[in-house]
Image 1 (cartoon, rainbow, N blue to C red):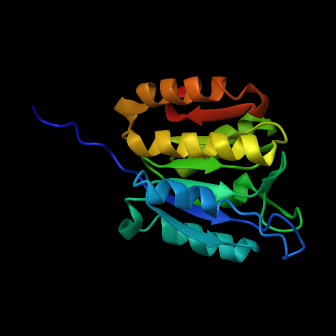
Image 2: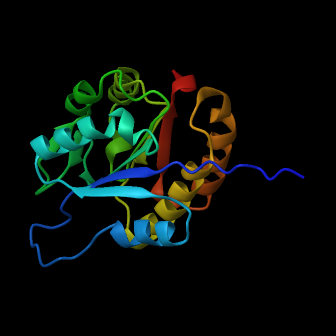
Length: 196
């Protein structure tokens, strides 16, 4: 019997500063290490504290040589206005969308950022359309570190196992829905190309 080939989508993580006191060592990197050490997912990890650094790194992410890392994981603070890399200075989804315009086919953008999905629906839809991403994901409330980290481990593990393309999207969203139902307090949301 032929064994089923498991898809291994890698994650390209950009993490902002969680605190203005750099003695604070909070990071999502240990969670990524856990997935990597188990052989579940490869990742590329960078930090960014300025808009220029973020834009430089996302421009790198969309290059062909990183096609095996179709999951952009933005681990940052967030607001209704956008993501925050340092000291709650917001970078709007419109600005980020301009940098990624048309370059995210069959890619998923997961914003591990509080409140980002409490933005106006038009802002989220415009971002999805502008980037051409298969899906965008995030939280609509302020989330607690430990439950959100547990959820993100499971979410990334799910995303890395499934094809990121239109035909497989329904199956993937069923898996993501089942997972998010286990963490209702996080109010995790997503928007997919087929929802437009």
